Image (cartoon, rainbow, N blue to C red; front, side, top):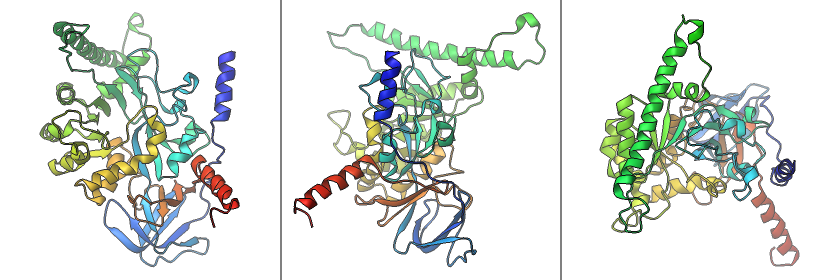
Length: 438
């Protein structure tokens, strides 16, 4: 009872008070803006018409119907909503408060865990994230060897059902650490460390074998009554990934981990994407050969090794682009970085300052992300037929002062206020009253 009371009080204190946007009732025409389509050229002075939450048409001098609302956005920019591919947003509020952490479960094998059913649409972090242009986030479970299934969530909605754009996005796996500790103070000898790693690999291999055997047994049309088995939730959850080749996102940073994960996927004919990927720049040929995309994290960080140039993390996106590796950009995952999901554009700006073009940098946090997550038919670019999920700003995207002034998610205009903006206005008024501001 005490735990329930604590959870209730925390949810009240740290839930946002914003009301989700209304469903679009009338067509809206945005006239004369600069459209960053991402999938094509930047269109200056073009119109964009959207209705019922979908982009209807893009063109010059579109003639609106009498029931269409027309907004003049001359000298303003329309940008597809940014997509954060790896976050725990909605799954954790305060890392130090156990009752607000829903991103991990007990045990190492939890493929049946679904992120969207634990998603908190009232999280105070959602308005902060949304007000910087991130309108879609892929919420990801974190713990264990197989953490569970992620869900692509819209940053608006009354309930988790309302906010779910797509589920499941992928199965998430944390590849075991392959680094060996050769120090004299190491708790395990080299042989024991290698055996521990091999034991985990055997466990994964046995899980694939059991899943495929389970799928064969459960799809047999004629079975004797005594041969029927109870449903195994874990194996049932693994069938789409180990049998039907749906996407598995494997967390691997070290070059040995990446190589091992790619060869493992090739051995069992699985579809994978590497997340993390700090050493991906060292083996681009392997990634291209096996058509393995990378969700690149850690752009704004220091090198992993002393002998590496200090700018290696910044240049990695440009290197992957030049080598033909398909990739997108992400902030780091896990608390406290949930509150930093809003800095996703900064990752792209840093990459653009070190060799990646601004066009490709914008694509790396919009359409490329949507393609890797399998939602590119709905979001990621400005194209007729796609969801009207975008924001309007006075400045071009990927500028430090870019600040969305309007945002739409499936045609619903959403509130761009947040706690930081409220505090800014509060203390601005304080100093204005003191005569320190005009």
